Image 1: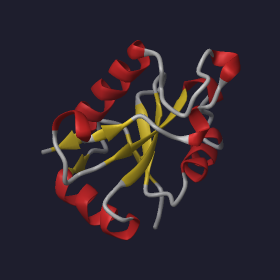
Image 2: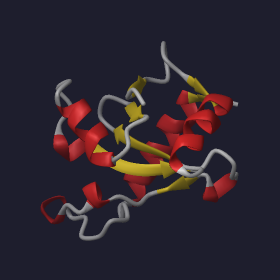
Image 3: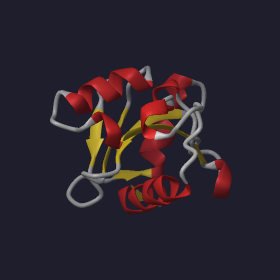
Length: 117
């Protein structure tokens, strides 16, 4: 699967497209969100693939956060804030979960502006 960059402005994705991508990955879509550039990379097999993809395009490590999207679910179950790339003690995140509520809210805003329902 090709990694896609969704920016919420010119390049958006539909919920149906997310569902199609999720079929290849057991019902979920891995994504890495750049909270500074307000973009997300999707379609990689691993969060680290998407992270590397964005780093090659001048994203900064401290702004990248891994999530999982479950297009068949709704509400709070749609987004899971869990990824190995989120283990960042030097940035105050000591678990796979995104612990900072402000970062979670930014991610939700980016997702809401990027997915057409």
